[in-house]
Length: 138
Image 1 (cartoon, rainbow, N blue to C red):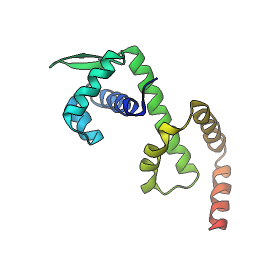
Image 2 (spheres, rainbow, N blue to C red):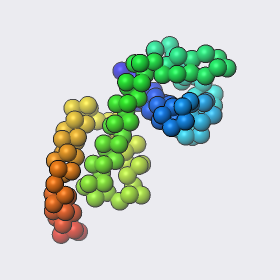
Image 3 (tube, helix red, strand yellow):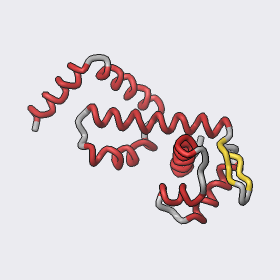
């Protein structure tokens, strides 16, 4: 399994490729707010670990293994955003909160959060009741 740092890069590369059809070192550096040299080092490591294929000066593509992990990481991120929104976390906090917790949860926990999100999405009254409870507590 990739490290949390590797996951951040794979997720970002996956998102860039999905959005633009390609991912450049400069785009990744800007998105992750790191130096291009750091991106190059990580890309080389991801290539060595077979998450992507990297050719110097030509760019890179995700391997099937890297794409599968990327899809899963994006799913996890989006699921956690949905979960935090459902439970009433302020929108301004959601992205940073997800970034802070996504690497610290097991996939079993992610699956259970997914079950809970589906439970609430199945009936909007459940979300309304939760929000009502939330406002009663405050």
